[in-house]
Amino acid sequence: MAMVFGMFMAILDIQIVSASLAEIQAGLSASADEVSWVQTAYLIAEVVMIPMSGFLARALSTRVLFTVAAAGFTISSALCATAGSIEQMIVWRAVQGFIGGGMIPSVFAASFTLFPGRQRAVVTPVIGLVATLAPTIGPTIGGWLTQQLSWHWLFLINVGPGIAVTLAAAMLIDFDRPEHKLLRHFDWLGLIGMAGFLGGLEYVLEEGPNHDWLEEPAVFACAVVSAVGSVLFFWRAFVAREPIVDLRAYRDRNFALGSLFSFVVGVGLYGLTYLYPVYLSRVRGYDSMMIGETMFVTGVAMFLTAPISGVLSRRLDPRIMMLIGFAGFGLGTFMVTGITKDWDFWELFVPQILRGASLMLCMVPVTNLALGTLPPAELKNASGLFNLVRNLGGAVGLAVINTLLNHRLDLHLARLHESVAWGRGAAEEMLANLTLRYSELGAGADQLAAIKRMALLVRREATVMAFSDVFLVLTGLFAALALATLTLRKPRAVAAPPGAH
Image (cartoon, rainbow, N blue to C red; front, side, top):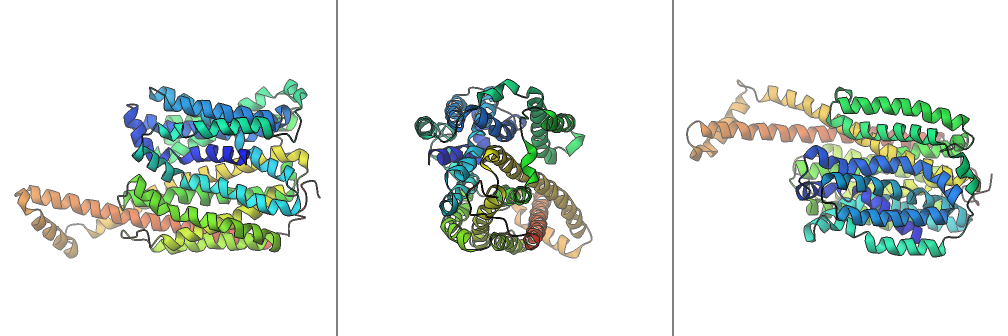
């Protein structure tokens, strides 16, 4: 329970600041480009630590790693709240993300080490719920804290629970022993390569869609760093005596397939958590609190589906569960392809229920598929890779979604501009009506106001059409994954103890 709560805090902090960046920007007198690093620094640092956590857990023991990670996360959270400049905030957010990343994979590895057979069918849905619920409700909690208190409480809220988790971890975790001799062969070259590879890749995926990808010098430089780092990282992974990340887990077919499906779960988890709030903000004009209230439906659906998912995992073929889950995802996104400017809470109600329920139905069998047949010695390392893949799925999904939104918006704007050009009867009639509405502004100003209003209407409609296109692409992706589950062989002994083969 202590480890699960620590993981919840670490994953929650990925998204909790996303709804309150404007307030942080104002509080620290930062520019829009600078404040985006509050999020980016956390993500880059976390994605470097997650795969490395397996090696550190073996070398230091899960107890030491988790205790140090929880303590460091708590201290850096307090330092984020006291930051007096944007530079300090970025540094402490990077520290927070790096240290917090050590808690996330440890929980998955511990669950498969501690709980055999039927017990795991109870524990896995709880961990899956926490891992997926935290980023879903993050913007809601962040928006509420900022409105009711201040942005400082986005970080101060971690301090009390963080101290409790640190003490509990130090006193209660005791199921493995450290292998200190591993530290004598620590692969510094591999660490440098992995940091460049994953850190550069995360930056490219985060900033590329907003800066014309490689046309932006910083994005291009990070792409080069990522490419060079990947060569160094994979070389060291195969030749180092004790590689920083052991890739041998991918020899297990179940783990390789489970990682692929985890990647797509990341797209669904983070992609849709991003898309719905952006629509509600840009088109409907909702503030962070109203967005949170609308999005809360997904969290409730996940919470109610978690125990059902646990029962089904004991009685149902995991391939059938994944088929139902991915098909539910696809149906939910297909329903939203008919989106209009007037869609509100109730129009999004059923799609969000489908999304929440489908996430839980997918997460449990995917986790069991990936980790359920690995020997105990490989679990810590494999858990880091499994979580890394899900996060990368989210990063790639967001990059593709943002790129699609921008391209389809430009396309629809060009087409709609043709429809409202001079000489189009309906357009000229609407312009005349709008000019009449703004007649109190005086001659000349009324027509300028009318033209500006028409331009805004055209942009709004083009934006809605772009959202519809993105939801259609996601529908195709989830439908393809649902069909792909039919090609899987039944996983071997998914419900057996982790040493079973």
